[in-house]
Image (cartoon, rainbow, N blue to C red; front, side, top):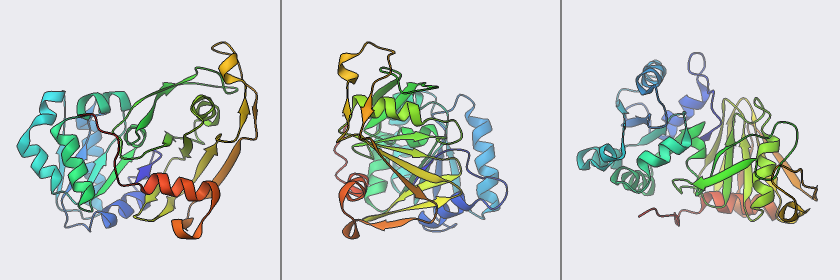
Length: 273
């Protein structure tokens, strides 16, 4: 469950309610990992209140302050048996630095393979990718070098996730990243919106949309221009998946079939160990 950030935590809480349902219901163990945040207790209290309102009765805080804490075997066992694992926002580089290649990360994979719902919002969403959009800014147009990729947790292969997408006008940032890595697809997720990946299908829930960017067949001069210059980008393909969209892999072809295939690949090919 890949959330674009800014999900409603006080009113209808549609996205969080969907997460609780996918985690197996309010009686299942749910862990909230705040490793991405520099104010983890404040973030935890915000989510604790929201999950309390949704009558989730077994919600616990996993606060990781350094990598050593992510190697705790008892903590790893608890996470491996969770029905839902929720990674909050903050800084995706901090998240991956603390969790990547640890027992906690491996426990998340075990839980995922056993059917747990893995969710990430904002930084937690970006950090789920093999190729993580680590940082960058492109205000007025795509620019060579404006976005930097890093190694993420690897739950999603060959798709770059950007978040707060429409609200922070991040189309140029995502185009900057995809132009230099055209074998990847880009997915920009709006706030209070979730891209939900099932075993062989996807759906979009919440209030916004998911924008899919495909540069695999585009023509661009990005390899020949200096850093900071604006490339020409011809035959870039853009697809909009609004809330309520549902697509099964078997019913699609072309880019949407590839997009679903990349997202639903459960081989988890990326491994920090």
